[in-house]
Each structure stands twice: as C-alpha cells, then as structure tokens.
Length: 185
Image (tube, rainbow, N blue to C red; front, side):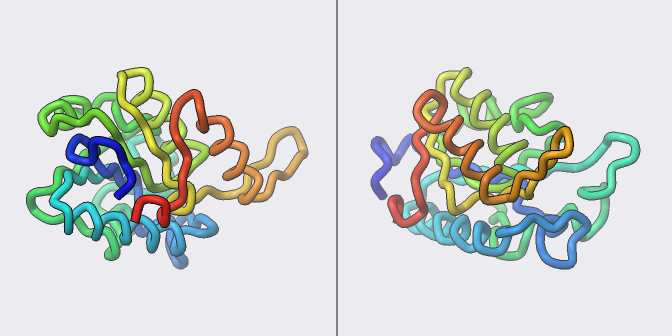
C-alpha cells in the first residue's frame, strides 16, 4: 500500500448500506462500483492487519425515508460486512464524528491517517473528511470508492458525475489527498 506510515492508517468505510444500492430506498448512482472498490481496499487492509472502522447511519430525523432503524436497508452491505474485531460506529448526522465515539476509537487505534470511502460524497464523506482534517488527521479520500447522486438547486440540475467531481475537487489539497483505489492496492 502506498500510504505513508501504513501502520497508523485506518480504513474508514462510511455508510455503505443497503438503502443506497439498487432496490434500496435511496439508490445512489455508482454505489455498486464504489462498494466494489471499497471492498478491495477492505480486503487489502485485512490482509495487512491494518485497522478498519465501519460507520453506519441510522435515521432519527422525523420524516426520514431511508436508513430507518431496524430495517434491512439500514444494514451494512454484504460486500463490506464487519468482522467482530472491527468497530462499527453508529451515527445520526452526516459528520461521522458528531455525537459518536469515532474520535476515541481512532485514538485507541493510534490513527494518524484515515483512508476514507463510502457514500454519499457530497454529504457524509465531505462532512467527515473536513472534520477529520480539522481534528488533525491526514486524510486520503478514495474517489472511486465513493458515490453520490445528482443534485438540484434553484432550478439547476447537476448530474451525479459533476457533483462527485465538484466535491472531490473541493476536498483535494486542503482537506485530503484524493486518489483511486488502484493507487493504494
């Protein structure tokens, strides 16, 4: 793996949950391809015995339509199922650090660097990466192991590919190094 000080790097898998996949309550374009890339990184981290942390969003906001508690859609996808020794952080906000014990878990693991994957790039990946950087972590976001849907504002529709590119470009440099999975495998 080409991550400096790999023994201090932690793979962070954010919200790779069933509702984002075909047939789910909120299908995200590119979710299957992103999950496949994330699963490849997961296999590599496990092979090297590097730490892995899973993050799972459970909706608490009234009117939520996906990630509802105790539903199959809120479960982590089969391709990234955690092992018993891998922490699973439950969150209720886009920022994986907000009102969770993620920071404590990462400190216990001795993490200095985070390799961040998951969904949705424009929301939870963005919020988590910015927070992690502000907390002093060196962040690497794996572009092809993330996915996001198109967006619209003020009558302007922005396709998923452009949303993905815009958010990754905004993170690149100031908040994270943005790479492809193949760069780390």
